[in-house]
Image (cartoon, rainbow, N blue to C red):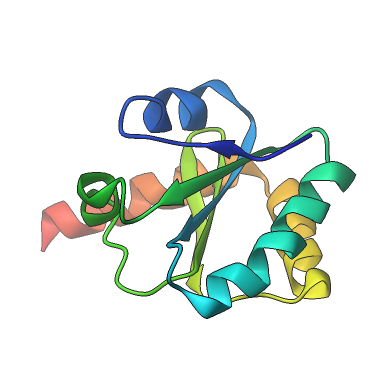
Amino acid sequence: MATQALTQDSFEKTVLDNDIVLVDWWADWCGPCKMFAPVFEKSSDENSDIVYGKVDTEAEQGLAAAAQITSIPTLMAFREGVLVFSQPGALPASALQQVIDQVRGLDMDDVRAQIEKAKDAAQQS
């Protein structure tokens, strides 16, 4: 499956309508972004069950600001609409596959329970 460009208009729907979504935040002037792009693209061909999106931070500055992107490339992973991974820096193929394996292996009921517990604790303090 090829990567798809995500925009302010398509980002939320893509994240909410798919089980696993990986997002590469990049810019054309970014050397490490250009090095990571073929790794990300190859991974998209090998993992057809995952949606691979790319956000051009120059074209989508509002979206990048809303996502608090301060360094590129940044990789985000969403599972069932929940942000479960976010890390700046270009990953080698093996590290990207480790992230994918870990995201696939998540118990999302447990993740949601942890989020609720953290919200409750924050409200009490």
